[in-house]
Length: 324
Ligand SMILES: [Zn+2]
Image 1: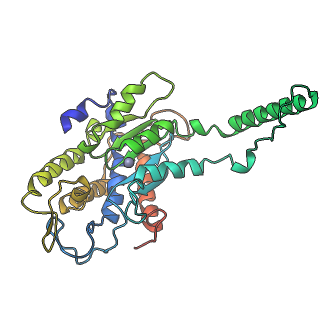
Image 2: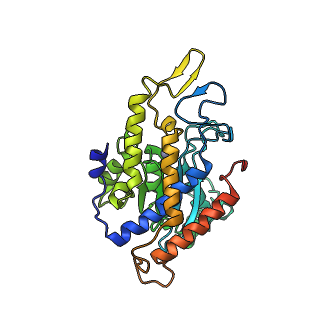
């Protein structure tokens, strides 16, 4: 798995940049540690990989996958979680949900602004109908240009970095490409996605339609990337003989990555990330990627991340009932 990831990101990062990226990854893991839920198969039956569940809320709203969006100044715009289960949908992925909200937040353009003027049936002999139709064309062109100059929605995410806990799927990679997201950092590789983000990035490199640069977190020296990789391999091997879940004669021995995310091992690694977020001592406190007064230093990022973590816990899961 890690061999594949080594080929993904062409960019090499300085120690200062790596430190900055890691801070955001710790926040993603902290959110997962807080909202982690192992009840993928419901409350019945026996879970063999989860440890003691007696104190764990039983509501499984979706897989244990989270992401955040960060703007060019280093500020966190928003966060979201996978909510497949609560919406009975296989497309309610964390990144897809987050991207839709980012565009909503950026909305300068409302559907009421659009209008398509009715055309009069073209009559070759009628100068009036020709004149009116040409007038409609001019007005629509003006409207389109006005909207274009006002909204710039296709550029809204061009300085945005997405940090996600699991490598993105084809849907979310495609949405990020269409949305012109700058880059996507993922805390864990998902071999099931076959590096689709990398494929899109290479396909579109140098074209006007550019996909975000995929950055596996081992490129920024996030040790939890390797921990998750090793733990997942352990699960894939072990689940053949020790089912993830058993209910009567039904034994779930699938090496599913979303089942792995319900294991105690995965949770402990997310907690490891949370501990880092809370106790981190920075090496490059005053560094920032540009000299804009609005851009946070690494020290500012860490403080901001800790505040956002508390805020995220207070407001709960996005667009769902708050269960804690
Ligand atoms: Zn996805």
